[in-house]
Image (cartoon, rainbow, N blue to C red; front, side, top):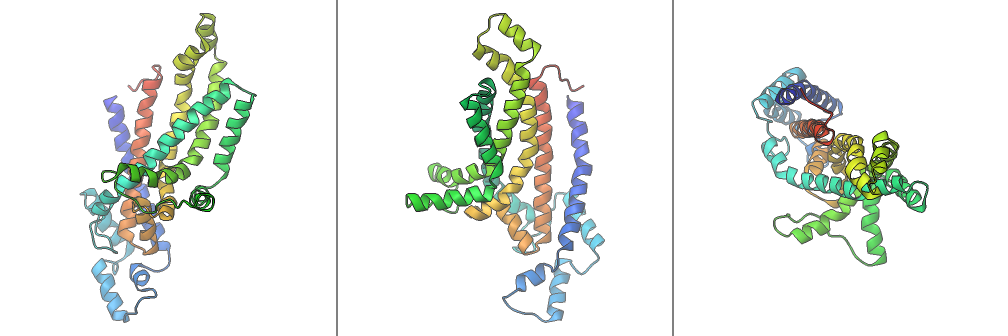
Length: 316
């Protein structure tokens, strides 16, 4: 097990290096730079002033030199300084990640708690009204984009009941109830698509397991339908569902860029969006690299869970 984990951690290095290279090249292909973005519409500066500011930010050297300077700092734990706020990139990430983590984890929890029971019920009561209702809900969740759901959750309560969801975010430690009230609509919008995917996959996976020989054997021994589902079917059906959840966790983190901007949450998503708009190279590179590392680690955790759910899987 330890050897497997060590090998997977070593394999993270080329993956993260590739991510760092791609994001570095991609953001520099966007026209303009941080100096032009900050001055747009505010004030003008002489060319020599702009050249001096670029030199202070290290933008006056060739791109490959900028990359090696940045990646050399990352290796030693120095992600550089934000070109917009002039604060350390890592400090900005650390201050924003609790908000995004809370949003992503609650969205994941919302998707799993809602979708798995509906998916199981849909499979057990196949071709009944329960099945049709579950499949309809899954299709609706998959068909409607997150930003449309978010807009609807803000707009319709205000029209029907005169209720305006509070914008911004109160710290969880300061007022948990108000925090939950603010986060809940964003959680529903962000987790809806994942819930639809989990519903469909749970249904198909449970249907497949229900036709297995060991399930027929369990029923032949006299186990009740509930016991068969709880002890045998559900455990065997969860492996593909967990795989989907692991691969979609990165999408949840990426989806916060839109949702946080709609609900004005000062998390990693809003920070990334601002970094893109202002061409804040160092902050954006640090954000993407951090999210990629979390995504890879989460997938490693999912792989390790396989061994817990299925005793036949061994990591030797």
